Image (cartoon, rainbow, N blue to C red; front, side):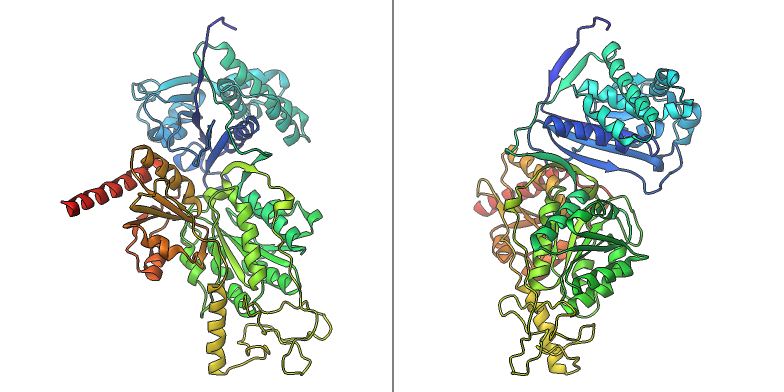
Length: 628
């Protein structure tokens, strides 16, 4: 200790961004800090942002990987617009992220990487640490790599291996700055490197070196405390969207009393669903990594035919390949849950970046009239409930269901209130057990529908007396025989559409605290957080704005038309070029205003705030003119 008296400052929220080369371990560093924030009781939201290449060119702008964490002592909705603290491990990370750091923000730089070669690689004419270009920030220059190497020299690790632990040095320093416990990270590292205890202890040593650096240096005059958030009572854990989806599928299988079969093919950012479900064989989950997307969904549909809960997971390009089998599931009227974790497109596009541009593909991306229910979770934790809802619809109405998550939700994390098992819905189904023909023939008619849901009976193959045809050719009403009769085809097309249109979904909930709003913001999926945060900001400015967020996109909630009609202006922000806006205009004849962005990153609350403020002021001005 130097004896320096430090100031401990209490703050209600902080945004930290770790940025470095894609091999610097920034995702692990950010995830560990997130885990400690969650264990401490903060509310939090995260934004991992990384290149698609397994090893992008070292030290270049395309190779920059970052992890942003927003944690607070109150409920928050987004990972934050701008970081309060930026940790830059090299010049590329600094150049790629410095524009987001507001004046007065804290910048911690790993000076060891600021070599002439690395500076030239990203186009710096001079070293920004030596000129005045960073004067507006609170800059801390720390030789992280060399300090870590020196600290780990007694371990016998090579210089290269020792330097790899510099991310743990950064984690230790930030953990000291924000008064985080060290035991959780120590335990994590020993578990992660259980097969190589020497590496585990080296990383722990680097972590403590970072902590001790903060404690002993005079560079940091202030440390910060963020108190636990006041959340609803219960047991929480940190969870990502993909993990929550996997848990939701496991729970759905238990609630339905059915085995779960996931037929899939790995694709970013959906692969984590496969990884997680593969761990839960004890819950009757079977995972099958097929040779391609088509085989994956084919196996899942076959499992449904055999009486299991068939599930397939993919991203946009995979949905394109699976479209024919989704159509087959529509025609055979079998339950099937299709998880689409959207990413930037078209084609293979931006595999690790987020987008909401598969909505129209989900609605119409099949041949013929092939309606499919669509639902979209709004946050990582909401993925659990969305998976249950998708399963409810699939089993109740005997239909494939498309669940549209996206990369932002899939990789982001937040606290999740673990539900009470007794509160989970009963999703159990009744299989057909005996012939049902109404003509006295004693046959089984596979297309004799439930009059309420229009669902056909689900007969497990091999059930005596229930032999029936199934396949992609058009079926005769009731009997299920192959039929080319024009009137029958017309009837079956309309029946399949009526079944989807009649699905019972909850009414749209309107967030309009004052009841005086004239502008309504309509959103879906992962834009919930930025829209919600923007609405809060607009209301703090003394303006009224209403918010409706859709989970059910097909069919829409039955009260949606009435809700839209209450407001003078409807604004629809989307991470596409206006796909929901197009559907709303066509369905409800509402002249919705579209605000779009396709940058591979989620909206920022501040940009949506500006948009909404503009619309509210325009409405006020128009009403004033009318009154005059």
